[in-house]
Image (cartoon, rainbow, N blue to C red; front, top):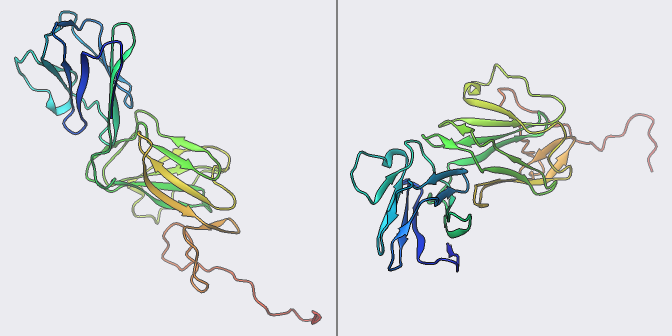
Length: 270
């Protein structure tokens, strides 16, 4: 999706490559443009690239701004290095071209290029007050701009801009009046990073739908909490004989108490 200002449509963004770590700007006009004071902005990452004071974008030419591993030694005047670190969020970002007067002249949005997101809501435990987000990939994922949303309570948890989830790891979001103590029987606890949401209950008391939303507002994972029974919630409607209780793995079975029709001694038959 590309938008341009009517103020100056002769220069615009024509490509944003999230995986390639590059952005291309073209001068469509018949005159050269002094790029002093112009900025390229990563909206999700909040980073900015400022053109060199002496840089001129000639008429009918393009300039490529590269970052991350795309930065290599080169003498091409039409390729400008930004930084050796990654700039663009690989799961969706927005690039803006800002003029020296502060006006957004051109904007280009790139959606998530991945077919399937490696991030998922893998577990919800309302007895121990936590929810887990799992990174199923072999790469670290910057969580800047990612949000967990509760549709019932309208509350959300936004990850810190500098938080990165390592490969094949879990981030555990805790909430409520008491923090979860580490379970030594959990063999995967070394791969769990614990973060804190809030002191109060952020989930709906009569069921909820939790969504994991990427920086562009796209829902990448969803888990529904449909039923409530003494503080325990179900991800789907349980079968009558097999309640599907969501909780931490345990070597011993979980026993759910059920109401019975047996009358106590002394009860009168209605």
